[in-house]
Image (cartoon, rainbow, N blue to C red; front, side):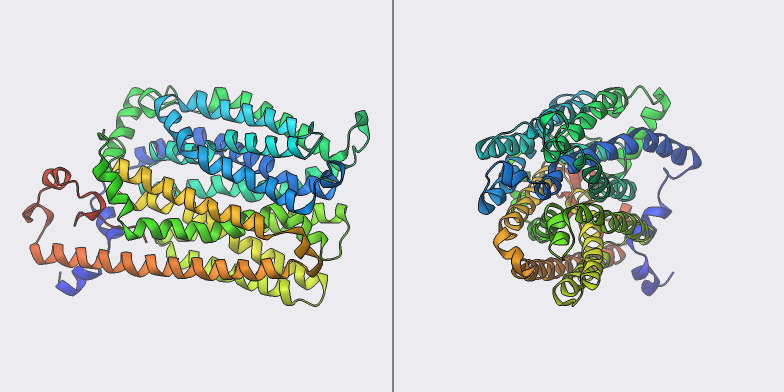
Length: 489
């Protein structure tokens, strides 16, 4: 093989050529894990997203009027959720690491289900503020907890499609939320309660019911997983050890924390999510209001949230499948951002409600798909080696990203709705352009580094002939800076 041919041998083909864990038995094992993890965890995330965003549906049915919540205070209530969410994500994952996902994740679901029910019992603005904070606290641990659980059951290249299915629950929540809100809204007056109160109460009861089921389905750590045989558990741990450091114990050192904070790629991951989180949460929380602002009545707006959210789910699954098949992510993230930008432009420039509604579909498809691509195990989850450094990198991504969510719900202020949220939509376009630019930076930087490392290995011969052995790489604590490490682009 010539040097030119060697240069074309990318990390994926190298991995496939040397992979001893891609046998029919391994595929059977992964399928068994899929059946146990994906359905229940996707259902939990669907309920989580439904319970955090159904306030948008409740608003159309008179929540702010009945509670005497002024327009700016409604945005404050939305922002308080994300403040609590950001503050408690990392502590929640520390608890998960110390205890058992089989107990922790269903318990989180049970508690936030109860909190969601209590949203339907609030009587004033202070109550709404307090309950949104509690909802943020109790939901904070689910997403990072599930992502961590995926990391101890799947290898890096196996997680992407699974996490995409899981994240698709967010878009499905918007579709189900619209249908449920339409039906539940007709209960206005039943039991002396408003329709918006019943939205919180009944959807919270559904969440509590799902949490009780989850206690019997969500698995524990793979070392003790009873749904696997002893042989399967050993095989699973061997697969993880071959793929990354997930099965290796690593002692905490501040050195790895410093590595994360001084890595330009880690900051880029965080800024990328910041850009996409702005549009994700502003769109999901204000979608019913945006559609109603096009000239549709409140009951029509509830139902009209279903098609764009359904399209978003289908787009997520198709795009991530194609992305996974090609082992490429960055171009699809950039493409999703531009689809969303086109959607917002159509929404702003359309001369009829029908044309603007088409823009809503494009915006939803692009926004949800972009988030699914960058969050499918989170990009730093795949590209940062070293458990402590990876934990810090993921925490930075989520924290800085969710600050974008806070900005989004504060900028989409009701006083801008008289002009169809024109100014917030323009700002959303700016955030998407920023996200596309950051994704391009990551794409170029990691491609150059992978190529540099490939050439370095070619210059020095095969891995076994290099001066630096794998043991020495670990001793020097190079992690993802090792010449043998390849970034997933």
